Image 1 (spheres, rainbow, N blue to C red):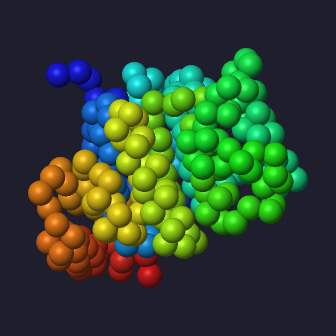
Image 2 (cartoon, helix red, strand yellow):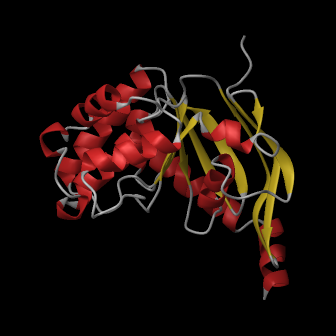
Length: 251
């Protein structure tokens, strides 16, 4: 077997008196799609920010595409595409100009054909010259995906990409993510939407109070079964003796 494209070992992160991550371990092979679930405050966004080299852990090691995230952050960022709550788009620029700007940041040369290809992929080709401030939330989210894809990264990181989308926009985004999975991109997605996460992912994980307490392949698992399992796992780990002691220390 080839080495995992993402390998996380003993990852911890502390904010003052609060542990956001407590010894997180997981691996992903190239082309896999991991959906990460968990209650609010579980540490999901902190984990994604560390993978994206936007936050440094207190301890542990992250290796992505063979790069040590702590030592080769600049090289690693060329392999990453990130979509978060903030679209990082400029409203006073057109869709095409936004992508041209980000292509230049990634050191791409003549990127006109690549930009045209990506805008067509996300269904925004006809709006390429329109100002982003005129776009709906769903259109901006699709352009944010185009921004994350413009340099053809191996790894895609998504933090709640369905937030604020209507059903039509959500379905369109799911189709795009499914196509990316077929193209062998490796995807790490945080979502509260159990149904969409299971539909897209090859792996499902649950993070509770900074620990991954479940990580298994999705194959053959239905939404009803997983919903029950999710509720049980979250309840058991939230109310464990270890967590009750930790909560007392924080009071």
